[in-house]
Length: 217
Image (cartoon, rainbow, N blue to C red):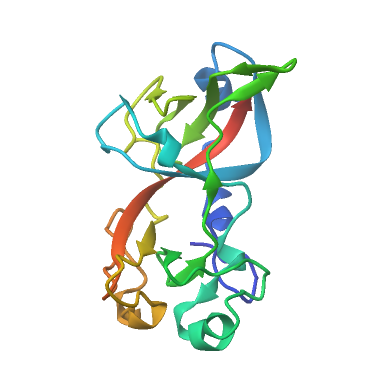
């Protein structure tokens, strides 16, 4: 990936600069409804069958509005910059029992929840639509519902996954310590499309990363 020029290293938005966001692709994806093209790409952390075009569970998906990479802390810096204070130099709080890691070995702030509803004139609309892409061949509309259902107008979850961006959530299963110190640094960087490495003492959940290039107006 291209570096951002930050001393913290690479971030998701660095690779996103090449995302398929030209006007023709955006307009083709958003053929129905009114969509606002984002000036800065956002990122979904998604769970689901890679071969599916619809499913459930979007209530467990996450959203990074800003690129989490430049705010991350390298595994080799964990003891000096996170362990003692529990707070990263960029200001986010580190949870020893629930933390995120990306493919280069950066400990990242976790995402917020993905909004599944909209508010229009004080009324709740129980769906929300996003224009998403994996920066490959497919740019399409993702529809999510308040009950967690999701669907793509075209393609599969794999088609809109950005393969070089790998991310996983590591949690403490409750029977010991789950520490970034236990990660094997030689496991990084992770190859595009590959699973994130296991970390001793932790339960791991891999997430697909989708680029959001537009939202329903």
